[in-house]
Length: 97
Image 1 (cartoon, one colour):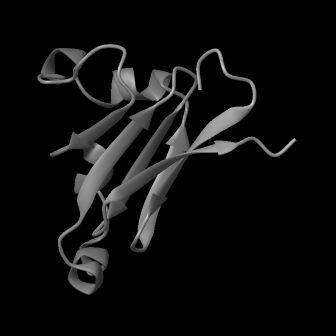
Image 2 (image 1 turned 90 degrees about the vertical axis):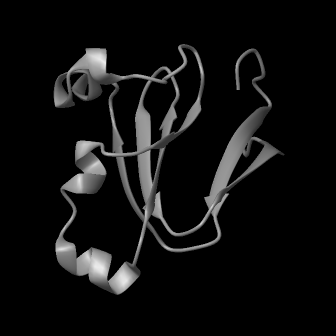
Image 3 (image 1 turned 45 degrees about the horizontal axis):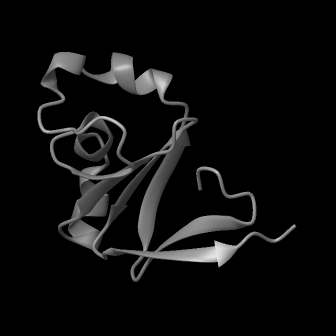
């Protein structure tokens, strides 16, 4: 959390997830940046459709898990991509030190 050394933002899901954590730089070479239509600069959480991460998952996973939603969380240091049937839940909690 910006300017807050004592708290962190916890993001949880009420369903199983497929996730990847990566540096933001690979996102710029994964797709043509000019196709980032609708992304708002300096925001944190996005619902994404048609991205390579979700499109390249094995078909078997789609059969077993059903229709999945793709969420992307961009922190300024990294990116967390999450595929899930659930919805994100956010909570500000005290950082464990």
